[in-house]
Length: 462
Image 1 (cartoon, rainbow, N blue to C red):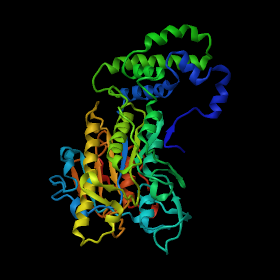
Image 2 (image 1 turned 30 degrees about the vertical axis):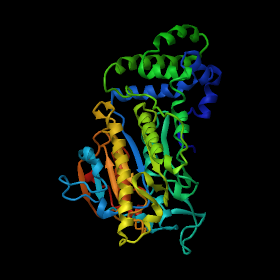
Image 3 (image 1 turned 60 degrees about the vertical axis):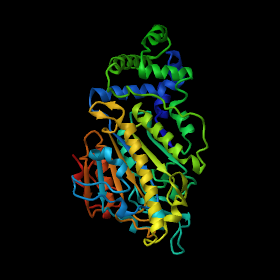
Image 4 (image 1 turned 135 degrees about the vertical axis):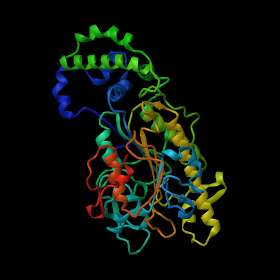
């Protein structure tokens, strides 16, 4: 499976209607939309449905590696009157839309093969044992592994809410590298990892396909921000003679959708009204350490635009990988991250540098929140209609512990989650994944290993 799961008609359906239809791309071209506009027609239809009823919810997973420094991450104070920590202080403008959880334990990672980083990464979103394989871990006694043994919660949710958007989910990253359990966190199923796209330019081309310069892209911009009815109506009569019954019905649906959307886009705050391809500027090499900050910025721009255009409702941003070992000289930390994470708790200088790395990531998290919050939608902003969850494969790097996981959530997914809180709890992280699924309409049932599920954390839900 590719990084983007784009919906296409089934082979069975294609065969059934082949005699009564022209090709999908030819059909789009003949109505003046261009081949690249086809996904956007589906997007417009789903967006219109959303405006007539429930506002779409989005889920975005944000990953950083190697654990944190709990004493510098953990807020102080009570549930509602908490004060943000050194690491999280840049999130102050969004404090009322945060949910910070301390004390979750990745209990599922106590089972199955793999070293600390391997099981942390593989269990993080799946809560299932790693499958046996031939990838050796970092300890002589660790049995070799392959991939995680179950679906990840983001993909479980994507299967539920991503069926009407052009892309079921979008996986982006920076410096993730390789193809092994340390580098993958999204899984379509057991042994089915989904690779993230590390190159923002390739991601842009896949999602937006030269929106500003390509003729098809120009038509898509008209679909999303203006009127194409005149151009389409001019061809409608002649097309009727070429199309079978099903395609005539589809064309009329397209016209109805576009007509309805025109009036809706005239109103501020409608779904998709802020759709605009991001400006990437001059190309950079995303594999170079010094370009890491800019790569993050570009990928955040891309996922924000993908959400705003309703191209997808589920995404992930994976910053490096488990055992991620880049340096951060732009914040005065020339040392490599994973190397620092193995320094002892008494190594004050190293602990301070790890704190600065995580504080920098928190600043980027705040920038993402600001991007989403700048886009008005019914019910508030794109941030209000999204749940972002910041995850890590470890609690603390030097001990490879996977308890006291540093969990930060932002946004409420359209009011599904009760925000503005700091919660302390001794619970399985599988219960959190289960509860997140419920917030997106999944049933209340165990997720991952059943024996590490205690039940939903209902206090998180509004």
